[in-house]
Image (cartoon, rainbow, N blue to C red):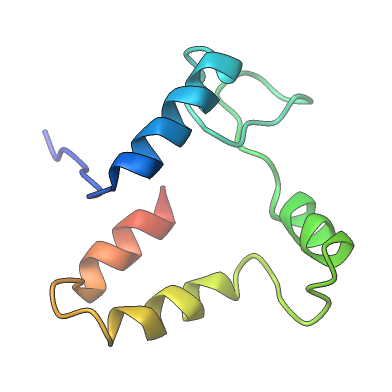
Length: 88
């Protein structure tokens, strides 16, 4: 199998544990309540939320650029690592 692993911090692990307690055994952290349990939310939901948070010029897809720029500052972050993390 082609296992996928994203390194994280203790803080992220605690947050994921809290989300797991809320979401149960859903496949996605941000799942769609309008679809089946294995359906992620639509990108438009993320974009609307960013707009409500006053990120009017930012889109969900735009965060890929943010992570890619950050990767350039982190020696151990490879382009493949960032891409794999954002795809799932």
